[in-house]
Length: 320
Length: 265
Image 1 (cartoon, rainbow over the protein chains, first blue to last red):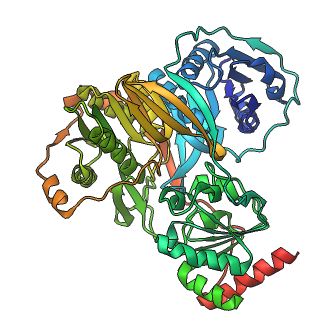
Image 2 (image 1 turned 30 degrees about the vertical axis):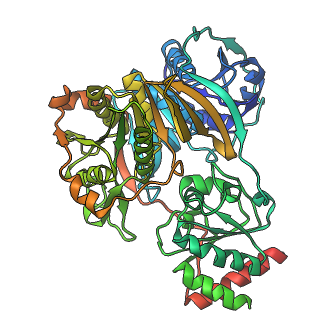
Image 3 (image 1 turned 90 degrees about the vertical axis):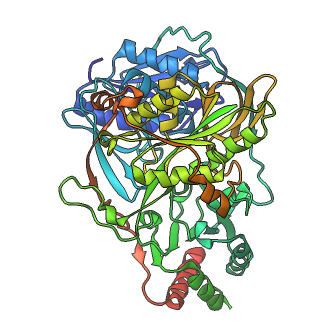
């Protein structure tokens, strides 16, 4: 499959993850330029169950690899992907920029000397694969090429490409035999859900969200009061949880909750990629930050470049 | 237990910055340097494991790839309690991508033969999230990425770790030594160095290596590189973001107006 694109589907606990179908969309775009096929590989304990779903319109073939472990295990997946690259010889491999991928895809790139980049936001073909990703915490965009590489691996940011419709194509599935016995080097113990706590921020219609900009734990009560006064539910970005100032029941972002309130008012949140992933679909986003270049302004509908404490003082006054 | 912690001195852009003409890099006058936030957590994890290790005889070694600017980050690690530090640099590493850096780290770590290697999940400037796992690939070490809790059982030489997955899900995993973990922020409370420790840090061993000291050369690094930057652009952003002008009072009034309008609509 010279110049073809291999998509690595991802499943967790028996469910196909949405990013898999987003990758199919990304692959269709770049495969046109590359003039090659789109093949989707499913590595799973029981991969057949996902074969129909990933066979979206534009997919030429589905490959299934049976894993000996019930759940994702990085070294098993690593060996499976290495084998697929050897036998299928794709020009590009697209995986999701997910926690599972971060656990094995870069190791494959290192071991096999492949082209590689992560957290890609655009991919196209121009005499070879090209990709765009953020630089300096997304303040800039970098365009990348992969000179001299026969195969390039990319992890693609979730939520950028429209997902292809599940099962909208009719590609047939082929089982690929890979010897994965003994490949595992870690042992699954359990899955644990983080406690929901006394508040469900995913149900709130108005979130007042605070981040690193509030500077000190002692400032939390005043924002709790402000949220109360405003009729908002208080949510937080990761640094507030990392510092132990609030529990992660209130955390918005990739590792926290994905929220879609009518109004999201962000005070002192710069907008790391992982945070934006959790709130970018809010109906109205208002951001207050001192840094005019903060990525949060890239997704906000309204922005105020100002000191959040000054604005908070004035909000209290205005609400009196 | 001997633990190597791989750290990075990271760049952050000033609020106002300029791109250089030509290759499009950022004008260094507008860059500030700091020890990567994730690495303060991985260093703390290493120090706690070391201090809790009844066997004794172990050490914590901080390793970095970087120019003289990076020495400050290593001194910060030594001040917090690392026993030794290693810095690798060569002009050929200027602008090196994550695979080239991981290749160099692999050579430096190999000389140490550690029981455990800790890396931050990602660096705040490059944000690839990939260097640690790539390093594990080069070293053929067992690895777990994005760890937010860990405990060590000396009798079985086994780590039990929490992998932080998406949407508040955690997977508990067991892994034997030797191993490499990438450490997530919030796993612990990184200590501050005392003034005295900061002074004493300068007396701790800090070795500097070039590529040839590690049996590497520039052409080998070029071959290891996974990608080449063609150009940097300032993204179009805020297309839909309407800026609220005026004093904080005027901004606040406008925010209240917008919220009331959207919540009642």
